[in-house]
Length: 130
Image (cartoon, rainbow, N blue to C red; front, side, top):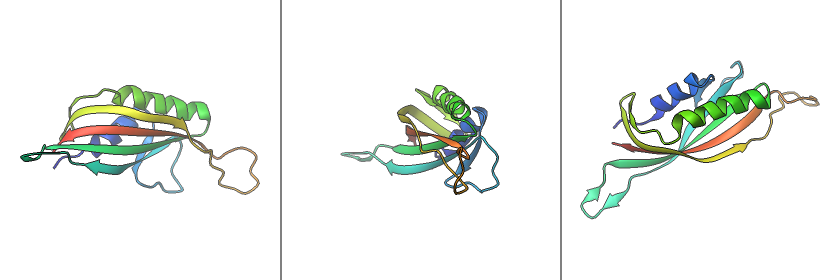
């Protein structure tokens, strides 16, 4: 089974952020993005599995300023919205951005006046062939 994670990682990095699956180390430089698969559904038909997988993915884009995080998030959205094709061993039939919102700014030090970084949260729907 080929899945779209390698394509998603490459797409995030092309947009200008270092991409990390699931978690990021404290020493990561900005901007960075953390991506994860939230769920996968394998649709059925009367004869069995369809051969498709429908996945929901989260991407949290983090930047030193809201503008830098937004710029990377917009580049990711532009690259993934309505994408179809074969990339990194995965045949992707459809991608759409189901949610795009400002996340909560992160303060790494108590009493800090300005956030350590700003977050933009994306939710992606990806359908691929298995």
